[in-house]
Amino acid sequence: KQRDGSRLAFSNAYENAQAERFFASLPIPARMASSNEECASGATLAGYDRSRADISFLSGVKAVKDKQYNQALSLYNEAVDKAEGTDKAFYLNNRAVLKAEMVDFIASIENNVQTLSMDDRGAVKTRVSDSATRNYDYSEALEDMQQAVKEAPGVAWMEFNLGNLYCLQSQPVKAIEQYDKAISEYPAMGDAYFNRGLVLIFLRDKEKGCIDLSRAGELGVKDAYSVISKYCKEANE
Image (cartoon, rainbow, N blue to C red; front, side):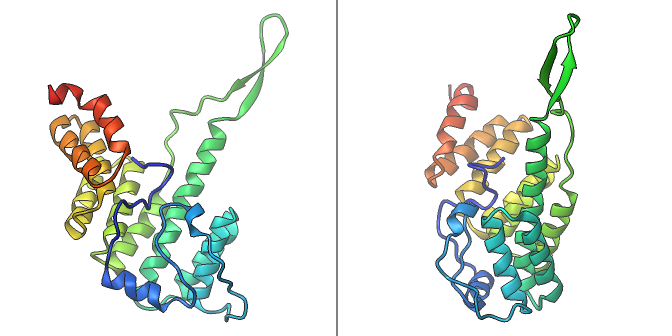
């Protein structure tokens, strides 16, 4: 349901008064990015009051980029606890994404754990532990994102992120509802069409899913065309 490891991907610029106010209020330049690697900045937090919620938040953003996930989570917790007004929604958004990424990281390790075993000739061999059927719990991340949407309703990329988390938590119908809301708020969000198309195909509504994928391609989501060629060939014939 995500592309290039991203849950914050966008194909076109997005304008929202709440988001613009939030970014304008920060002491150093910041923006929404589709991956941690895009968050590079020469700005420094030196000299700022570390007790401020926005400084805790920005420190958390930097810690995530440096792959210091536990530290980042602690900093996001501080920001959320000290938050006032709708700023809390943006802090919760990042904390939710971080929690989901931490679950993914643990899953990636578990799926590659090697265990020792003995064959019938006494030779020691290694094998990869089979944990592919395990269900991973994204409920904490989902709760944060639900709260973020409640605190700042109408922010398309939060609706989009909530849809992605519903997918990860195996709730595809609710995911579609969130993608619907995201598209309603931001009709040019190609990635919402892309993800909704994939979910619809998963739910065996290929016709609608392929229409969404086609629209995603028109809006600049290049991955859409490879998916269309794989799943929509019969629908187009």
